[in-house]
Length: 440
Image (cartoon, rainbow, N blue to C red; front, top):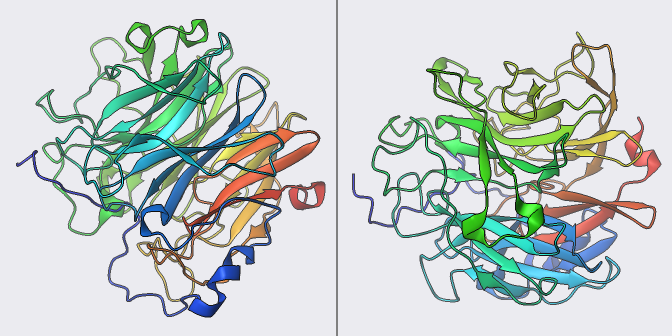
């Protein structure tokens, strides 16, 4: 295998389908961002190919009370020029022009920064970790990478490049330790039962471990794992960070993460993009995207050291399974004790499209409200889904996708709950989640 050649690949690449005929008409594109009826605009691309792809949209509060929006931007996903940008707001309404913080510069290929996620320490230092392109590729150029780190001591106005973070390896990684892992994080971390920051990540197996699948990107062997930042609240320099890699292996057995069998190929796991919340009883509840047509979940009673075997997520015990194509399906906690699940409410089949056509079946976006059920087998039960956002199937942007609310984030501020979402991985928008939107 040649690990020194660029091998970009698009995780949402379709297979066996022609371009979507429902392309938004050029004369209407100036107004196309209004299609999902947003309440807030954060970024609307202009006629600039370099800023055409915007995704993994994470809005968070800075130590001094500003609102920061972090995302991965490129000319088009998988093209080789991923970089991280940051916009700022005082009130969540007026947003600054995004500024570059890490990754490929204009006109470059390689040196990418992809899928950055923030951690704000109690000490006041902001860290951003990301998949760092070091020019050695196994899976692809935006997923194979070291764990890069930048940090800020002035509320995110300027950034310092820190040392790369060593990552614990397992048997699914390339046998040569010089070849980085295949991994991404996309959500904001949460605090565990002891107040420590932790987050889930996807690991794809090395090509040296599993042959590259002939039937498509969606069948690549993968699993969900976790990392915990044990001393980050003290604000250490990156080389002094202590990270615990989860799950913790039992004696004599390697830790292999959460697995969900691929239909028809049970020897392959497809379990990706874990999203976690802390339950009132201090257990962790994790949901994952899969290629089964449903969301799956697992539970940890020991802050992620071990997990139950994954199961299909249902609206309630013995209820209907919650359908989902291979797309992010985050769960967010609300301050009042409820939860919000964001998903697409189809099993991958949508109109003429099948499960492999991820550019076209990640819509509409639905919300379902979750409540903790103390005595239940599945500890969160969900209301019937309510449609929240849609693109009406019209495509726009360099990817030519009609998806919506993939890789969003959520904030609660001044009595308002906002879902911050990419619209077709192009526009970055916000919409209020009202009580009417929550309860079915």
